[in-house]
Image (cartoon, rainbow, N blue to C red):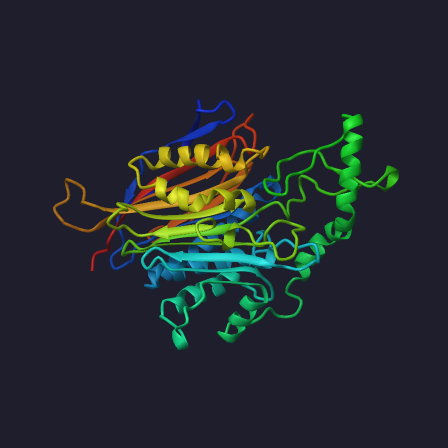
Length: 445
């Protein structure tokens, strides 16, 4: 039997801090349906970034999440490893021009694409990552290959195989291991989309300083659209007099979304997590965000002597905020307590928004998707002793919105949802949290 998952209703709760608005999930009672004979079980949860998702592009965001879920489930049904399934989901997300990863990545100050990606296997606890990688269509495929090669043991002369490579070294390693380089013109679409911003990049620093001085004497100045959360704000005007140009706008959100990611649990209860990002728009060349860093972008860990639950986490948002709080690892540790929802809420409040490492930040911007699973006994009325996997899945964010999709191997199609902060909540100071539960029962042979 499998429990169908439904988006839960929300209610506003008082929080420990007057600056934090918490949104609690009230999980609806799931319906059940018969598991198909011979079908493998598994579950995937994906996200297309924590940031700002305009209503005009909501259909595109949801569609790419659906496709990513379907790719992962196809792998699981074919008996693939959890790491291969999560990689398949990420490749689909990277190939979309609507996400800030792979094909749709933001450009740096030099007009180049530099991507970060990482993957973690909950069974072996191995990790693979790339940072500031150019010239490869799907960075997550390189991260996954690093993970796989690392599991083969030491190299010649007793050398330890790498788990994290950056820049030109990562590119050369990928090509040497049979991963094809990008075809010519790969970044053309992204370049055209960001060309206007790139032309203004050299002027931004000096113009912002001048604008700040003008705003101090004239309170009619406009605010910037945050590149991490994309909050709908008035445009910032760069330039003088009639030459002023709108640098950011609410509907032009091509550079506002951040990291994409996925978490998976397979039939054996093994979990995996992955993450991929093109980084902040107009970032300095060589900048590496949380998507490449251990414990910051993703985390996966099977049950063990000190971990009663298997957990998988993938993060999104402002990379610098996520790096300084090691959010993926923090969420995984918190999920070992009995109440997953409360544990995640407290982590987002106390270890992220309220983190002493981010005390000087005006707003702390990020989001996570998490799942945890454990083996449980069959239903009392059942006379059969079938192994059953209980999966709890949640997403939480402090940004304006977060787009997610989820699917089990027994579902006909994926479900998608764009989670948004409630009216009146302030991005960077408020937390939204939603999710659900499903029960995966091993198929009849």
